[in-house]
Image 1: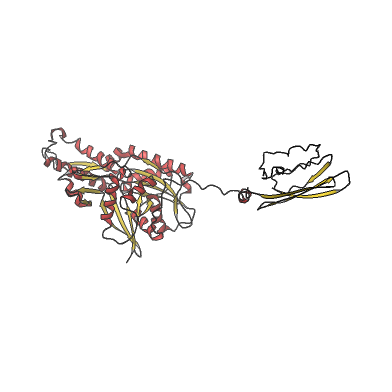
Image 2 (image 1 turned 180 degrees about the vertical axis):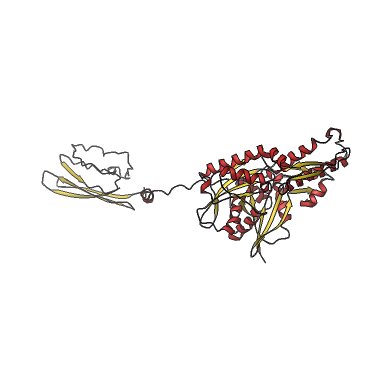
Length: 470
C-alpha cells in the first residue's frame, strides 16, 4: 500500500515520518555517512560506531556543502555532498514505499534542489522546513486562511528564522528568512570546553588511539549532558580518559545558560529581522513555533517569549518531518518544482485599458480609390482589423459646386483637432506624423496616416472630425 513519507534533513540528525491514516514519527537517525573501502556506504548509528575506528572515512555536516561540486574525500573514496546526501536519503527510505517529501532549510535555492535531483532524487518533493512545521501545527490548530506563523528553528548545525502565511489551501514564505551561525554543535563545544578546563588536557597523547577514542566518548557525554539539562538543573559528566585523574565534572543549568546566552542573542536578533522582512508584528502572529533539537533548551523559550511579549509553542519531536509527510499527501512530487528562499508579493494585475490595447493589431490593411470628377476628387478609404472605428466626414467644394462626401475609417488615440487646409497646386506631400504610417506599394498613391490630408487644386477643404474614445 502506498503512503506518504516525510524527511527532515538536519545537519546532525534526520527525522523520518510516515502518513497513512494519521502521521507519526518513525525514526531519528544521525546524519552521518561512513565509506567502506569497497565504496559502499553505511549511515546512521552504524556509521557512528565505525567512525571511531577510522575517522578519515566518516562524513558529518555535509548538508552545508550541497550544491558544491568539490568532492569530499572519505578514505580512498571521493564523493560530492550531493551524491552523499542522495545516497543517504535513498538508504534511509529503503524500508518505505510511497511518495516522499524532504524538508530543507528555507535558504536553499533551486540550484541545490536540482543538484540533489541530478544526484539521484528525481521524484522527491522539496518543502521548506518552516512551511512543513506550519503544516504540522495547522493539522491540529486548524488556522484560518491569512494566518501568520513565525518559526524559530535552532538545529544542530545552524539557526534559521522565517515567517509563513497560510493561503487558501497551502503555506508560503512571507518575507526573507534570516540565519545565524549558531547551532547545537556550538553548545556542545561550550560544554566540552567547560569540562576540559578542569582537566590536565595538555598532558594527553594526541597520537594514542585509545586516548582518541576516549575523547570521542567524552564529547558524546557532553552532548548528552546538554540535552539532560533541558529537564534537570544539574548534571555530572563522566570522564574516562587515560592519563586524567578526574572522573567527573559537575555542570549546572545556570552555568550552562550563562555560557550560551550571547549565542542565543544572535538567534533572537535574527528572528526580529525575519519579522521585519515580512512586515509582521508579534501581535499579528497566530503562533510562534520553536523547532529543532536545541530549541528545547528552557532558556530559548524564556528568551523568545520575553522578546515577543507573548507565549511560544515548543514543537513536538519530529514536527517538521510530520509536516513534510502531510505535504506529500496533499500534492504529488513534481520535478520542475523550484522553491525559492522567499516569496515576493505578486505583481498587481495590468489595467483593463492596457489589456484591451494589447489585443489591437498593429497591422492594418487598406485600399484607396481616387478619381477626379468634374474638377472634384472622391476618395474612399477603409481599414479592416480589430480596431476601434471613428467616422470622419470631409466635404470638398469645387468651383462647379459639386460636393463629394468621403467617409474615412481610421484609428485614433487622441481627439483630432479640426483643421482647415488650402492646398495649392502642385499638391503638397502628405502630412506626416510620428504615429504609425502605412505606405501603399503604388508610387502614385499617397501615404496615409491617422490624419488624412487630401490635396485638391484650387479647392478649399472643410474637415470636421469626430473622434471616438481611445
